[in-house]
Length: 263
Image (cartoon, rainbow, N blue to C red; front, side, top):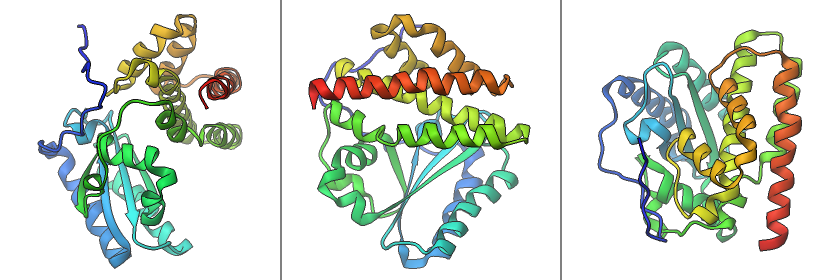
């Protein structure tokens, strides 16, 4: 099946006209209720992204991607409570493979220096499910290198952090979680390298990889290996670490190379 993309230079806003799939409603209602209960007025708004937000999630296979915007800094105890909400919800509602929860302060979101990250994220990639809708504060964006650069600024840190986690863990379930996460991170980062050239959004890992390979066809083997990790197939640690060290390092170097050209 051939996927069709918009030819407009301005990226489409995230489609707000949808209803959350019934299977995921209990999980989301519980998570939102508990976060608001724990944080009170500090819970400014909560957003849903990914396949669950688009209404195309697969029960047992899709992740729930949440962003929580806080009106003020959280204490260590508050952060732990919120992160534990996601962990408990995953255990009680196993319809989701994982719950990815990102915490960010309102001041950071509204900082003009971060507009290409958070403005783009709320306008084009997520759906508000509680609180004030920050998407209304931003205009639509065009695909740009600055967006890709800001979204992937944490790539070196993630590679280093997950390398340590993979090396240290002796729990198979945790190992598979770590491999899955960092493989997805690398695949989306790969798409980030060509986002400004293709000038289109990718709505799935498959779309992202296809677009990336249009420009880097010699990396097909690496992409195949990332999908093996994403499938949660257990491979020797040596193999997963090799992907972080080889392809991960290549991604970081390629970002630096392009940034030197574009700025």
